[in-house]
Amino acid sequence: MKIGVTVYPHFVTKDKTLASILADVKIKNYDFVSIFPHTLGIIMNGSVVEKKLRTLETTLSGVGIDYIIRMPTSVNLRDHVYYTRHFRVARAVADVTIKLGAKVIVMQSGKSGRLDLEIEAIQQLADLVAPFGINIALENTFSVKDTLYVVENVDRENVGFALDVAHAFLSAQGNEEKLLEDVKLGTDKTIILMIHDNFGKIFPQVEPEDALAYGVGDLHLLPGEGKIPFDKVLRLFGDVPLLLKVKDPEKFSKVPTKQGLIEILTSM
Image 1 (cartoon, rainbow, N blue to C red):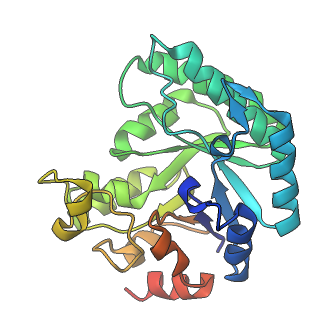
Image 2 (cartoon, rainbow, N blue to C red):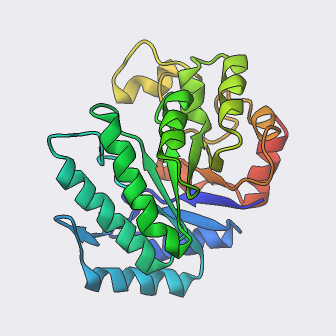
């Protein structure tokens, strides 16, 4: 089982370099990382900054860990007003992925706008990266059904589903049976399974600093700290790669080894 870890942009500080973070992940025996190249200054005004790209290449090759690429969450290919700007950034991310030799781009589907624009845009991106063996994985920001609808209508062999279990749990409002029903819908299309924990509550809406106290929202907890039945979810899949998503830097520093995480996931 391959397991990766998301390296969020705010983890990289003046005291903690990307190289040192990647080294820590590798020491814990994880197989790959998810990185956000655009936050490292590699894309500026929709264009690739080649000098900074080469610096990242050097860092990645020096550490020697596999990686997948994360599209900016601001990209909304349904936005007909600013579509050209969104697509230009998305195209630049695709170019970076090709040049870095990564094999997966994870992106979120747009929240509002013209669905036909998004489908056409993803088809263009998929056709661009297909010759390089790159897959595009669409993540469910909320509803599994909505994201699967986009995947199915894009209709490209190299476009699949990035199933975020925690988002699906929120969509199911903490109902375990509903969660498992939704997950089953996407099993065949899933090319990467994203894992983090929460309590399945979306109400009441509270201030970010109060969310944990209420147990509300997309908390990005370590598996086992919330209520998601990961053992039951994992039984629905074969050998699909897992991606751990923990946003809090302190929690990230305490992420267990790969084997430790496997034991947590399978012992619930």
